[in-house]
Figure 1 (cartoon, rainbow, N blue to C red):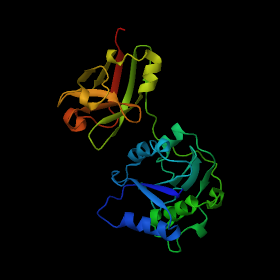
Figure 2 (cartoon, one colour):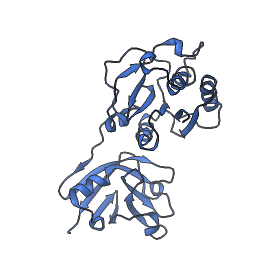
Figure 3 (cartoon, helix red, strand yellow):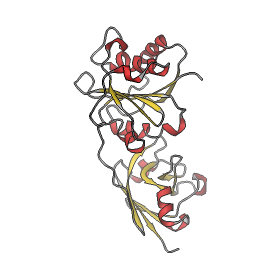
Figure 4 (spheres, rainbow, N blue to C red):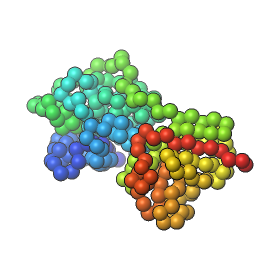
Length: 267
């Protein structure tokens, strides 16, 4: 199987930054398969990138290397790290971008990226993605040992603010953690946890997001009429707020961090 490297950045597509990063990696490992996860992360949005990265392990095979370059502190003393988690490897700044991955999948030993022989000869202080992270990821993908990237870090990966998600006997509360491309609000409430606590009669759940109250969980978007507000289980198992044929974020005023509550009706 060809080695796989994924890229999650805030570079966008209008400049040559993504191409430069890929070019450096392919120069070191011509057989790489490079997967673009997203280059549309808002500039410097570490938390947004963290939510995206946490969804990746279940979709990729063991040995995949994931690179994150959302790095508002580029060129500063913030550490760069490489570590293994969920049978895959992760390369990027230790600035909180790995917070959700670490919450969901316990990382093994974390290494600081300090072995300069793995870097490009000339390193720009504003483009560590191209000159440090890309070369490290390419070498890891083709089998160079993780232990050689640098010394073991004895510090925990930087965490993100805790997201309050609580499930009680008759009510649960969480927050919207991401707005996807379609304007859907994705929460940190896992539907499987609600089912475990309340049973699988989802028609009895009452979901409140802002001023909108939704009766029951739909199976898919087509269960609702055009323009209707609905709640359903997302492809990642999260409680999701959507508008059929619409953009829930714009139409309902949904924002990241907004509280969403669920009540268990009479069964």
